[in-house]
Amino acid sequence: MIIDIHGHYTTAPPALGEWRDRQIAALGDPASAPSPDSLQISDADIAATIEANQLRLMDERGIDVTVFSPRASFMAHHIGDFQTSSTWAAICNELCYRVSTLYPDRFIPAAMLPQSPGVPVATCLPELEKTVTQYGCVAVNLNPDPSGGHWTSPPLTDPYWFDLYEAMEHYDIPAMIHVSTSCNPAFHTTGAHYLNADTTAFMQLLQGDLFSRFPGLRLVIPHGGGAVPYHWGRFRGLADALGKPELDEHLLHNVFFDTCVYHQPGIDLLTQVVPTRNILFASEMVGAVRGIDSRTGHHYDDTYRYVSATPHLTPDERALVFEGNARRIYPRLDAALKALTDKESPSA
Figure 1 (cartoon, rainbow, N blue to C red):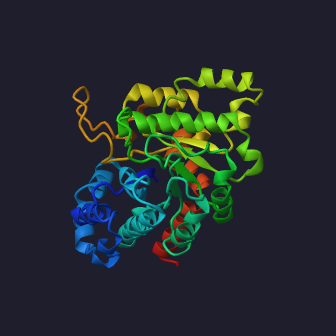
Figure 2: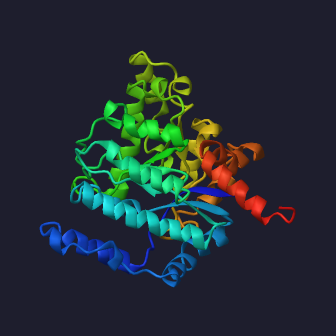
Figure 3: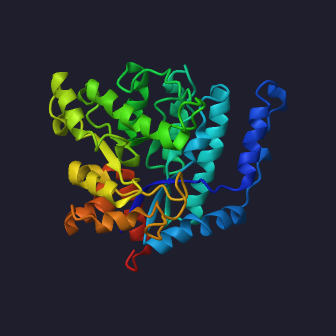
């Protein structure tokens, strides 16, 4: 089985964005804020956007299942207050859940959190509980910078985040560390802010000792870890200078990386530097880079090709990247897939 652990509903029906525009326009006049019930998206609307985009590409590329969450750039936690984010997160999470009910053998939901700058992270817990227990979400997306590119939140190792980590351990779910839109003109959202955040998160974790307190916590750093694999020697040297253990011992029982790296040399480096047990297949298809590479004739985000072609994985290691690691690191995903298998089994 080929499991893509990094998918977003980037092709949601236009009505979703139009509702969000009305919500933002009403920030100065709460009485004119649109009701969630005013958003009308039919199953046919969902099917049209999914079948023409994500599902079509999954079939073309041989991807069996995608862990599917709301569009990252749409999270925009810096807009409005907590209530703004809470309403918006609930709408986006429900929409991804509906995708999973329409295509239960192809999409498994993950949730965004209703984060808001300066607001205690415990306010996110009701939405987390709902999405896990009612929607079957197998992971959450955690934004380390709800300010949108200004980095006003404390590091991921700060007690500010501990209520969330306790809940994640309780529900046995991982978080993907994923920022949202940058409102800082110095940082392009997908070309700089995303990759900066990946690198920054890893360094924050390196500087701290988070996993001695939360040994069951699992964090996935997307986009191949940003600069991390390329500068592995730098991070090893910094760990040594800071009196930290080797990275394998200090971080790699709890920190993992995905394969959203859009050229063969990048995947080759990732698989050569990072232990196989810490790499999960992902493509973030119909995402930041949607074009076709003129040098290869294939989509940049067709990461299945790169993982299949890299010489740094044996067949058994490739199977771990494509499936085994996802099942281990996302136990609720593993349980959902087993339940599907049992349901489809003639003897069930």
